Image 1 (cartoon, rainbow, N blue to C red):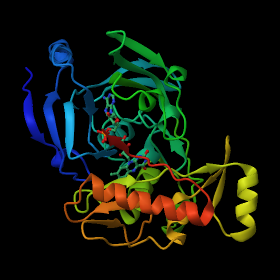
Image 2 (image 1 turned 30 degrees about the horizontal axis):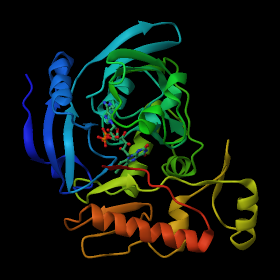
Image 3 (image 1 turned 180 degrees about the vertical axis):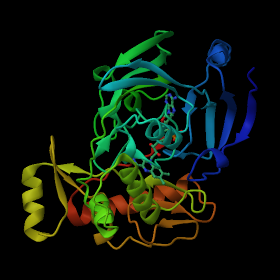
Image 4 (image 1 turned 60 degrees about the vertical axis):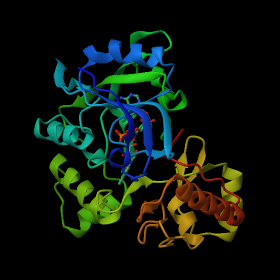
Length: 338
Ligand SMILES: Cc1cc2nc3c(=O)[nH]c(=O)nc-3n(C[C@H](O)[C@H](O)[C@H](O)COP(=O)(O)OP(=O)(O)OC[C@H]3O[C@@H](n4cnc5c(N)ncnc54)[C@H](O)[C@@H]3O)c2cc1C
């Protein structure tokens, strides 16, 4: 049964706590309500924003159209072989709860992605990644409702066009409603801890036996020590993607900044956006309503009821100063809507 609200306050539905108001808002708990919801959307000719935890959004004060909070639940084992399992998960499941559930049931692969806020349905949208793992590595297929063809479609991993913090879904906002994600998880655990911060924490704790639980605990501890909890200090995680530059551009930057962190990438060299921003003196920058986190230059925070214009102004100033100093263009990671 759908209840559709109008003029709905979304402050509690986005982790940046933008004081946004939706023209219409509803919760989708059951896919059987989808036809009724789609009828309402078509009848009123509404743009639609499908949301989970609202942890990757920068909302405007007024959000026209219909905001749909997807809350469908279900975790189902659909195939079980000697080496691996396929697990089908409904879009509205909480991401970290899924990671915990898989660990408890010895289905391995998701450990490095522990504690990322948000829903399972959003995980393919920006191909979430952390500590050397991207969710695209673990997705077998994604079930969607395609609002263009008006039909349910199963999209294989390659169809999703995953890239660094990107996918077909992110490039076609509003078109696909992700209803379930099917993960291919391993029965044998293989530790992935090449990431310096992770290895550093394990070394510091003297942990030699790299079990799945040990990696999970390390990821949780490192994240808790580095990232502000949005419930205490509203934020949307990393606000900028790590920029990828050409080899020539990197060589020229390295002449002036030999200490610049860099990582090989298929498209060139990946730079650390946080380092670039920090070099421009932004860490801890404080404005009346918004600012840059005191320990994490990549995280913009909303400490006193700031709105989209406050965040946009700060983000543009940061981008400009990084460009002026390094000639590198930063790209925003969270999705600005509308
Ligand atoms: C403290 C913090 C740390 C973070 N750390 C990381 C990190 O390490 N790595 C990382 O990759 N991200 C990180 N993020 C970003 C964020 O957690 C992820 O992008 C997450 O997947 C967003 O999930 P959500 O449910 O909150 O999505 P929302 O913010 O609700 O939505 C994000 C986008 O996905 C779309 N969407 C959501 N659900 C669906 C659906 N079912 N069907 C179709 N479209 C949908 C929305 O329309 C929107 O475009 C972090 C955020 C915070 C606040």
